[in-house]
Image (cartoon, rainbow, N blue to C red; front, top):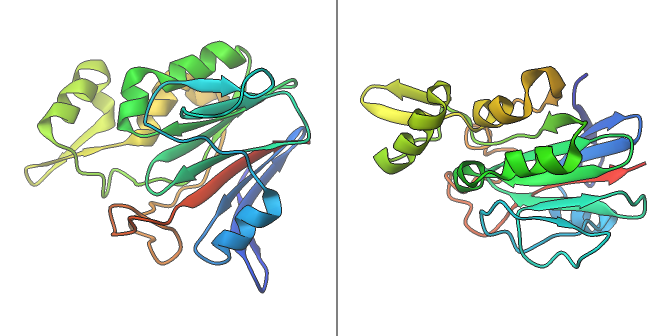
Length: 206
């Protein structure tokens, strides 16, 4: 199963549809229009492990959303961090995975909430570009050394490998393989200098 590119005169975005859910990831082309058209629910993201069930609580602050409703789209704002979409027959979930969120256990939290699930990865900064400092290296090297790459005296982190290690490769059904920094022509990337704008990663229950 693969993400499909949707190219219209006004927007260019990626889409993946499965039975029961549809996932989308915006680009620089038509970014604001994408947000207005699909009207996703967002939180104030703070690089935490907190996930809000919007069927029970207002989505104020946190880095994950979960719902069983068909009348809403769950949204994340990303500009290098990894968006992850989990789903089962009853619920959908979207989590925002930067190194802090992963280290604090957001993928573990989503796994506990969803129990039985499959998941999809969006685009994020890749280990080709995500250079980290020694304090972050120690966190991941101690827990999952397979997430660390070293080249020419520099250290890089693989966010996707870190998440797959928690959620399980057998449950992964699709991955949008672009590095947001390498493909800054398409996506907003904080590491490439986009300090204000964000890509939108969205999942809707169908």
